[in-house]
Length: 232
Ligand SMILES: CC(C)c1onc(-c2c(Cl)cccc2Cl)c1COc1ccc2c(ccn2Cc2cccc(C(=O)O)c2)c1
Image (cartoon, rainbow, N blue to C red; front, side, top):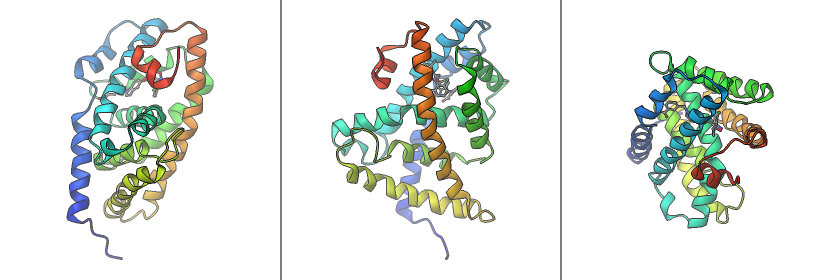
């Protein structure tokens, strides 16, 4: 059928993409990646700073999702806590696949590989980065996919799931149309994107184990990360 994005859908997409592009990790934090220190300790501290900055960016982005601030306040917190790790895996995957400027990508990979994360979590993590890279998403798709991840109704402790579904559904519809228009030769592209969201959920489990092993080695997190990840 002739797929067409309506004016209202284009306006919704513009709000999400503008918010997504406005909220990036500040360059001075990202630049720290190129610092010369390479010890596991130094890498962990840098990644902790990146994650903390990323959570702040994520909260600002989420506040710009139309309708989010009208949700029940406890549900807003439950959605942020429930989606933070997935949104950050998505963000770091998009940053990897966009090949950051002057070798940041290799440096970031190096620091993640040498930050006390055990091999068993590296494989699924870098497989995910590869599978996101292969999609060659445009920024509209990246921004909508991030908003859709945050607006997942069945996160733990969400009370009014219907209210979240009512926000997520229009995003899914715009993304579906965008995929048809952007990838006419690949009718399954939208399904492939949603398949990444399923893969993201499995990374939640690995991440919980990563946190436990870091804590067993007495690694400290920032107050914001402790709050969003319910640690310490
Ligand atoms: C606490 C810390 C050690 C941690 O725990 N789990 C993860 C962890 C790991 Cl090791 C992998 C994936 C997800 C998480 Cl939470 C992390 C590190 O979290 C990160 C690290 C880097 C991240 C992010 C998010 C993005 N990036 C990359 C990035 C670089 C430069 C610019 C920008 C930008 O947005 O402009 C982003 C999070």
